[in-house]
Length: 387
Image (cartoon, rainbow, N blue to C red; front, side):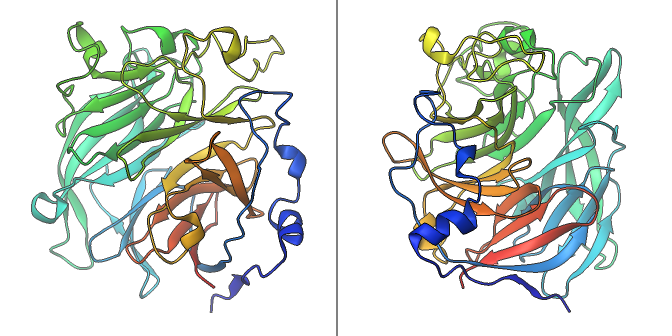
């Protein structure tokens, strides 16, 4: 039997800071970095965690209407998991993926009209001329045979251009907006300069139709090629996207050596990488801070030392009321869930949950609980709920 892992945190505010943020120094002081702000207040949302299942190098998850989960594993397996029975099935028909480095099977999302068209979308790393790149495929999920779920009609609808050497910074997160458009985060593939080049879709946030074509109304739609896909540019490795209740898009991305960012995404805006960053190159070479180049959009909040963000949700449920409309960010090196108040002036981190393991994914269930996925082999799927 799976046992309760963490009992509800019932502690004073002082003890909370020690228990849930054991390394307060992990937030850079405001005088060191104008983009990072010390918390003027904290919240103490009590919660409990329960271990439900384990998976092999999971990367993303989403819910079906019947509350079963689709979970991707980087080596190329799509799992259909039933929380009620704690059993999982392999979904057949998944395209071949290029596993290695940061690459493999990535994100999974459902079409907004999934109930009728049964379409789902997978992002994954693929090898081709020039090297590697992320692609997105659309397929129908066939559940007609209860024990043999499968994908049919798999079709590639989008790809990173160009394919390049190396297997890092794919990003390839996907998200549907209320207008039915498909938003895609495309990493700069550790190549720096493409993030500023409108002739490539690397280092960008993209807005597409549900068939992968550029959406009408994009800021560079009059230009040729992939420029028409671009909504914003100057991104490094954006690994989480979420809309708030006002329909505003927020993106969290890994900085270089320092300077992880949470950005409010604006049409046509340039977020500056690699020209500016509140971190520096791993080689030790400095990168000018955002404050030196006001023409670039600065992050709403950034972190040095880094949190290594992996995922992002904006909580809208009722079970955990102190987190309502707050951003929850999964952290890899920080082994934490970082809670951020998006409405504070300035945007502020208000709670940090010490998870003691690298957090790969977050997903809000229909009942307001949160699914938390650890990173790596034998990664646990955790249920985060009210105490």
